[in-house]
Length: 486
View 1 (tube, rainbow, N blue to C red):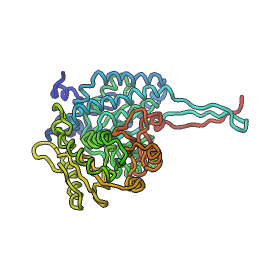
View 2 (spheres, helix red, strand yellow):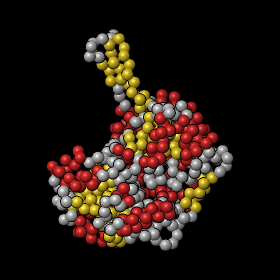
View 3 (cartoon, rainbow, N blue to C red):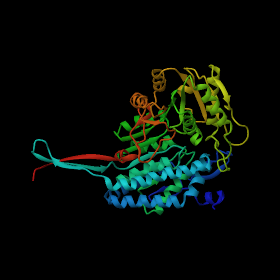
View 4 (cartoon, helix red, strand yellow):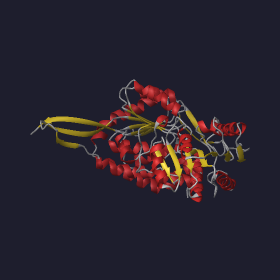
């Protein structure tokens, strides 16, 4: 079994541009920290604006050949990448735990989830089709074809270092697009390891380029402004997404934006409470609460709220906190001290406004960025925790009486990524599918992400979809040709 030191020693530390590993043009580096200790894991290249331009140059140079590569060949490379990922599963899981902090069991789950995008889109590559037929007037032949958008700039977040990369790269490659990937500076090592895996799978030089940087805005702006770029895909906060959309407007870029969330988790009086509790714990504490799909607001019918609160508090008190590599750990460190401070502030604001804190809610002393997972009840309207994305292990409960009140509370946000509903009333379930203003809904389930399904939101949670048959079309342009009848 590979040790932590052995694993870190074999991870590439340069920029991957044009199929080669290189240092930053000015020789600068950035430290990647272990959130469990606050100590440096490794130093990697810190890309400059010039490095970003070189990466785009490489993607542009490779675009025509990659687009002309048969769809079956593109798919086979993705399938080889999937197979290699399974062989290297243990190493990728450990690497994610080291740089992000999530428990090793969850990191293994991410390898499975992230790998499925490679497998799914390896199959989708060969399924791209068009249309051919006579127009309604009988005067000509209509040909509708699909073509790759072109060079794409992909910006991924820190919380799912592998899955967010595969969810963007796999459909882009399947469609015939070359890419420049900019992973988050907090968790770049998984992307570097994945770039090497793609090269090992036979991906031609320049098709995927990876630039790691601490100067994100400085590097990204000229890439987005370059007229050769045709697509931008971003996962992250709504504020940053809005800024990127403004930058993208000048060149009318195709954009995909998976932005912030404020997911309601609604539990009706007729719900299977055992199932609801399991779903709640999964939806809230998966990835230490650091997920855009994490349940943010627990809206519980007043008749069962007390029992729900008591039971989830017992479960939270039993959770083991520690470094993600330790056996049985369920709650690892948050990504950094700022994340801890935000959770503390949200809890304190809610309590000040009248909420009851049942457990946790404080920073844990010692090395690393640890926070004691919290349960709050009686959270009142106007509390910051009901408006802001928590991005941490805080379970905030408020109550409702009628279905109409529950719907109004759930929709009372500018976000609309995902919602969760627990009810055994199928008529109600169907009403809520239509009534809740979100792009996704978990009905009696607490985890819903799947490579075969479209992932994305409405309102300020973003535009576009990733995954499913819809995901590849984000990287395709539709061309219509009219020809005379033969």
